[in-house]
Image (cartoon, rainbow over all chains, first blue to last red; front, side, top):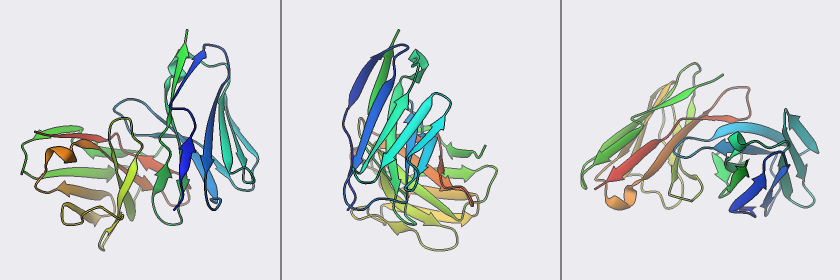
Length: 111
Length: 115
């Protein structure tokens, strides 16, 4: 079965710097990969989706890359702010089934 | 944007009782909804797929007789935790995909605590 690894449980970044989170998966490459934000006690909120034929996707201060050769996606937040502090989840969709999530990376932006 | 709601947002119950959690898609119809469970500091784990008008499909290791799912309409799915025990205490989250959109919309979650 597909396994997803987000290589940092927690990441501390100074405000204004770029935060980079990593998501690696095993087995077959999915048609697309998604990133979600989850705040404590809340459900995940969709951020970005990138397809297998896309190298990069941007949305405001967010950027996602997808390397199907390395089986890896990188998620960047530029000009980070304390309000960006949250847990960020990488997720893959398995055909018609629900999403398979990584454990998430708890990002802390320090002022 | 599309909104999914859950009710209740939190519930505390005694061991042995049953608890029903509702998931509603507020501004779109969802023939499929998904139920996830999340333990502290763990990721979301898919429990089951709720299908409108037919039986739910459960992931391996999830007891279908314990977690009853009913998808009675195109905007409502319910998850009933029967004979709840303390180990069922968790954060239950539902989601619904929207036709024509690749992503899923998640509810705010329901915190279940079984005493």
